[in-house]
Image 1 (spheres, rainbow, N blue to C red):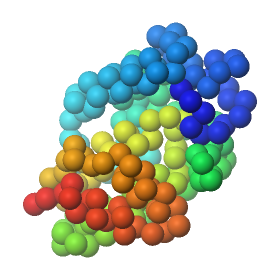
Image 2: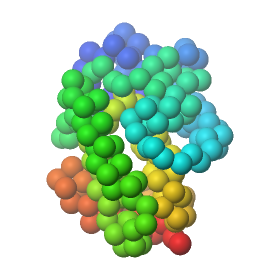
Image 3: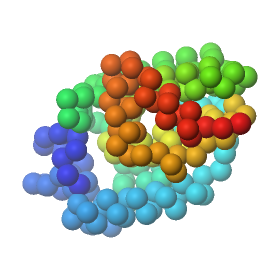
Length: 195
């Protein structure tokens, strides 16, 4: 994979490369990206909806299911600090604490159940962007988060589909979320979520 996280000397990668060590011994970035996409897509289709609680353990379980056929560290919290462009994600030493605090707040909000549509979109955008900044895993955060947020949405009584989301707009929404500007994420979620 390309150095999209700027992780420097990364123990997750094959020596002298930016390609993540994997169970298939793929050392070409484009082939690994293709395998990752294909395997996680098949795995995602096999993950059934589950009711709350939704917590860090649940997110780790989702990540395991998505990536266990490819990475030995699937479902494990990352052990390196990572950046993407100018965005520095949560320090690895604080990932577990920050994630647990965020999921605790989500639980106190009853996993966003029984909210109006507009309020649900508002809070979901907040939680998505905040969890994205924690970035618990070395790779695969977005896919694991999407499954988690699909479950949150279903539990709240809504429907969701990410199929129409433009990749560039999604990235922009996440970048804006770094500065607590959730407006772009809210507008995307308004398109993805229905009654």
